[in-house]
Length: 497
Image (cartoon, rainbow, N blue to C red; front, top):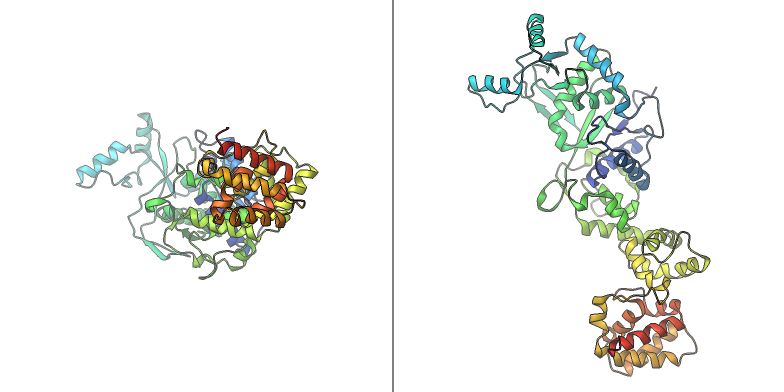
């Protein structure tokens, strides 16, 4: 068994939809808290909602944690002494706990319908939407039998304590819920099938979870959980309530909660664009926490060493895409060049310019070109788009329409003609020689400013207005392909194509 003093946290998503950046921020903070304290990070799946849960979503959760490098100590595919780690496989445990709670009088059968509860509130002059009024707490066996004879099915409710419930939140300090403000709540249906308010705390109790780091939208359910943990302990289950820390919400534009329907909430959107795992995790860490006032860029190891959940802000954290991109760009620049090049490969494959493992020639070209774009790239797909022109043959080469409209019009013809004339005379096809030739032909010879001089050349050669450095690009592209593309650009400018 695990040591009672060991920090044990859990990440317990439902397998519905696509992993959400707010959900992953919660996973990250739990993982960092466990790693900082040398504790255990437990990953379990809350999959009792058969109508909404899916195998695809389950696999997506595993895929997300693996991609991000958030390894788990117990859970699916890893195992552990507190399994199974899928709620759909734990029904016997839920039935046993419900039976023990009922037998001890902690839980009781409730037969009141929603209409009856509303009618009682109206009769007493109360707001009819107040919810359950605890009216069934003391039903006699005869009353229960009469309800059953009518064909009614009960629900099972926890008997809430008649006192204030106060707990110390690691982020928000002491929080108190006054006696009577939280009604007795439903744990299971009449057939004994458990609901989330029972399964989630029971799994925490049985798995020895010591700290629960979760979103502040769940704060209102905390007094119910604490009361249930106390009831569990009285019937011999667990060691009481864990320590709570309610994390600030992640919001989108207009300070509204970032929902699953928001495109920017989809974790895999960032992977598809080419965010680095370490860059995205760095940014998600900043949604409520900071390593230092004057420092935004740090590694996962540095986060683990410094992480203190009590320093997490209680204020909502707005997801800022520009800031996320800036953080990712900084991590791109920190990569070793060969690592950067290897990470670009899948995105070159997505561009359709390589297939699978690069050939020796492609690998050599990528190794030479990678340093030219590493400093200029925000995400890996940027790098792949900038490098694409180097890997395609002439049949596959295209020029961006907008770039062509702005740079390959009629006034570009003399520029490209002069460039071709000067470059054609070169014996040495090197970046240095290409630079000297183009500056002599275009800046000195035509009296053009660099932007006007080199824009048409860049677009004709690379197909884009943003590319790796021009002279180095042309050296890597080679004399033959560079001259052919400049010639095609000249024909386009003259209106031939």
